Image (tube, rainbow over all chains, first blue to last red; front, side, top):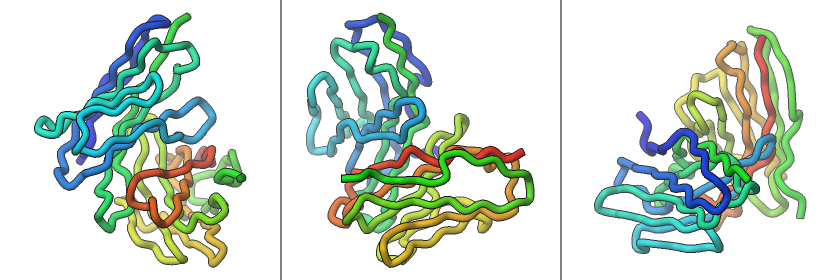
Length: 114
Length: 115
């Protein structure tokens, strides 16, 4: 059972464009939603994270929007650059639970053309 | 501060063999998690250890096992390898206070190819 659905699988934008990656979750116990960025040959690295009591969070050019009622959240990358080309994963966890794990979406391969 | 170190980085095995992968977490981090990454399934949780205790295990067969040592270093073992075990195995560490907030620090992974 895939508990976090991520779309699209791949995305190509021009430099300066605003790619948007969407995720939806099913488990209402999830209360912490991080995004990870992975470059080829590297492990994923935490990019930005949000909790459901906040509808939007910005860090630099990266913004997460959160819709608790729809159980959806999305990542926007403002003024995208070729260096942003990477695979992006959304994830979810129950921070107060005892499962100590992240449930990941299947990832979005972003290509930013110069 | 050194990051998460995984060894070996690459290895090739044949079906039926077994493999042991090693992970050294960031100094001071006591939680170590393992994830399997494949193109088809993405990142899937294998297990999590804290203070030498397995606190959670993902939906993988018993051929997948792990352990954590008193210095927080961890190993995972896959026995009777199958072609489908070919994957990137990622280790991640976190400090105890953040273990449930998803702030994981990943290593670069061990890429296993099973022939």
